[in-house]
Length: 94
Image 1: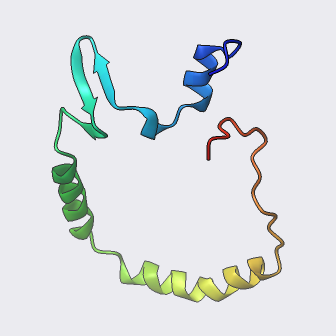
Image 2: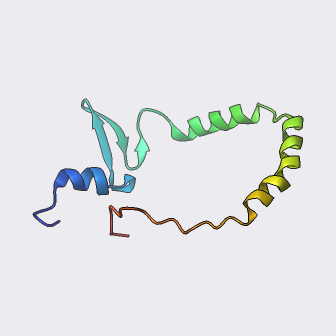
Image 3: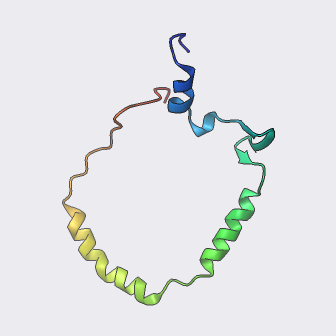
């Protein structure tokens, strides 16, 4: 980096999650190699998926949503959506 670059600004405003290798809190490694160390991420995912699968989606709500779908689609059909452009590009490495 250039010597005039503020390291705090670089870290806070330009760093991305992929730039982080290890996180240590109060001497304990809580994140290493892109994965949390205090819980099993896959096990949590399986538990959440099972909980969601156990809750049936009400048929009447699904029917209502299907009846509304064409009206919602018609409402937004002619909307012009500009391409998203960030106000400030914090990281030009991409």
